[in-house]
Image (cartoon, rainbow, N blue to C red; front, side, top):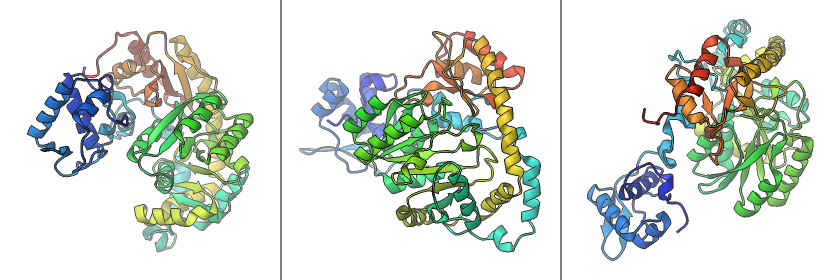
Amino acid sequence: MDGRFSTLAQIEPGTRIEKVMASIRQRIASRSLVPGARLPSVRGLAKAMQVSTSTVVEAYDRLVADGTISSRPGSGFFVAGPLAPLSLADIEPRLDRAVDPLWVSRQALDEGSVLAKPGCGWLPASWMPEEAMRRAIRGLARADAALLTDYASPMGLLPLRQLLSRRLADHGVQAGASQIMLTDSGTQAIDLLCRFLLQPGDTVIVDDPCYFNFHALLRAHRVRAIGVPYTPTGPDLPIFEQALKEHRPRLYITNSAIHNPTGARLSAVHAHRLLMLAEQSGLTIIEDDIFADFETQAAPRLAAFDGLNRVVQIGSFSKTLSASVRCGFIAAPLAWVEALTDLKIATAFGGAHFSAALVLSLLTDGSYRKHVEALRLRLAAAMPEAAARLISLGCVPWIEPQAGMFLWCRLPEGADAADVARRALAQQLVLAPGNVFSSSQSASGFMRFNVSQMGGPHVMTVLADALRQPPVSPSS
């Protein structure tokens, strides 16, 4: 057996027979088993799931009875029925659905919600340059009709790509406009790169912890994510090197400037050693630089040291300007651009012409620069204030970030972050518990806090109450 079937300890409660059935249904729902696929032998599955052969026989009989699988005498058991719709929630065991990454995102994105959201990953609307955006929109309303109605080229608005080229050069990343393709977001940028670089079953290294949507996106591409512990200066290099040898990954996805969720910064020494390992193993790196404009002191960029050889850099303006104005970018090796452009046409057709023009207007009229300078000052004031309030509740920051919006905190001894998040949600507060960021599920005692979303007494009052209460079950 190849280890693809979960052992009983990894599956939701139930009888042994029900657990075997749940594991098979899970693999069918995730399309790991498609119609007509042959199931493992009774003995093989019993060994893989650490159950008796009679348990597997009974599970198979029940699945045959309900039409999930079919039996062919002398040949074995096979998946029956039409292809099930892809369900990201079913690709992995539903260990803690109430606070998994997709659920956290749904709650935080609910526009009709009155929830306070210190677990979300963006700034409050009141912190964004509303008046500058309204002024820019009024200006664009007088532009040619093509800007308001037509698709942009798949590469994106040339003047904005030229400006991005100059902005990247400020961080030492040399990328001409012909190496930059605009996207609708940083997430779309990573999605396109995954489509270009990966096949189902490939292995990808991620930081542990890392941005939780990396996990969801990689799950959608049906690849295996291997987590490497993250330190205050970068990934744990001995473990990273061992992962390269054991798993032969195709790709590593990381932040270098301001790490999400920890707020750490990659050191120059770490960056050089990391690139040496990547060169030796043929590893490609996606450097997500979405928080670049929050920096007060520039961190090393892998793409700068590498020269966009095996490092691809992505970014967007969702965090600093507007999540509603969808505009991101990919800076990639020139040889990749044509294939990436074809992929963009196939999946999104043209570019977001109006959004790109709006971003360009704000970047060139001086308002964005002034806005970002004010944001840095505001976050610099909010960070120590939030840290002090959290420390008073026994939530200790892992490090003191130099910039950005996130505090990665260890909760008081014995507190489980998922339990705390459930209790807080019952009081209209969305939190981001540690294990949604952790591929190894080793961060149950941690929580990510967004310091820009911590204002008002309600947040700390609810958090204090949630930390005091006894654990609750996921079904309560």
